[in-house]
Structure formats: structure tokens, C-alpha cells
Amino acid sequence: MAKRLVSADFIDMPWKNGGGVTRELYRLPGEPGSDFGLRVSMARVGQSGPFSYFPGIDRILMLMDGAGFELTMNGNQHVLDTPFLPLAFPGEAQVDCRLLAGECLDFNVMTDRRWGEAEVQVYQLAPGQVYRSHSVTPRLLYRHLSGHDAEPELWVLEPGDSLDLAADEQGATLIDITLYPVDGA
Image (cartoon, rainbow, N blue to C red):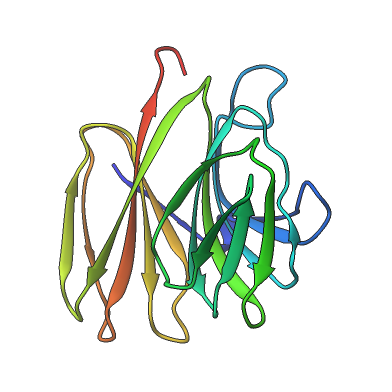
């Protein structure tokens, strides 16, 4: 049966580089000596600066709110100024972030390559529309409602779980994270 996680289940923790705070939505353990196998989080980015260094980690990052930011990775520039468009990159890349115009909220999926892989798909739901999910593999569903009083929620689905998620009267964005753990993870 799918499990719903809400704000009370999430943990605020400092960034590895000390430059801010992340709200950790979900974490799975990794190999001995590693920080995690999988981590899903959101962060308020209030200043420009370098990203934390995460060797052996694959990252998927997207803007959720705000004007966005420009990332310079190994000399290449990537502008994230449209909400919910994922950008994948290796955690060992040297990344410098420049805010375009003030604070932003981002969404981050981080996977230790020894643990496995994650894939992200984003769906925009119209008011009242329902997203039906039947999970063949483990997955996480994050529903981002548009209303001011909307509480963030993350659903954890094991293989065989089914779930219907509906948008409210203002619509919703659904982030579907499919997990592909390696054998034994």
C-alpha cells in the first residue's frame, strides 16, 4: 500500500558546503560509508555560489519557484528559468550557480551509482485531473499543488502498489520518480 509523507516527515539539514539548508523529503541508505543510496530534497537557494561536491552521485535538478539560476558546469552554461524542467548531471562536476533574480526553490534527486538509478518525469495536471499510477518498480510521486495553503507531499510506492492522485481546483504538478536499484540495494 502506498505511503504518504508530509511536512512532519521531512527533515531540514544544512548543505554539505554550508551555503544553505535543504529539506530532505526522502532518503534510502547506501553502501557502508556513504551518506545515502537515494535522496530526494528541496532547497531554497538564496545566494549565488558553488554547488556541493558529490563524487559517485548522479543528480537531477529542477527549478520549482523563482526566476531561476544559471549553472556553469565544467565551462558549459545551463539556464534553469522554467519550472519543472529536469537537468541531469554528475555530482562530481564543478558547478557554480548564479541566481538570475532573487531566491529560488529547487527540487533535487540524488542517486549513488552503486545503489542504482532514478528517472524523473513531470506531469502538469489540469484542475480536477487524476493521475493513475500502478507501480511495477519502486517509485516516488511528489504532488506540488498550486494553492497557497498546499502542503508538500510525497508518496512512496512499492512494486504492485496503485495510487490515484488528483489535482486541486488550481491544478497540480506531479513529479514521478522511478527507482531502479541494483540487485541487493
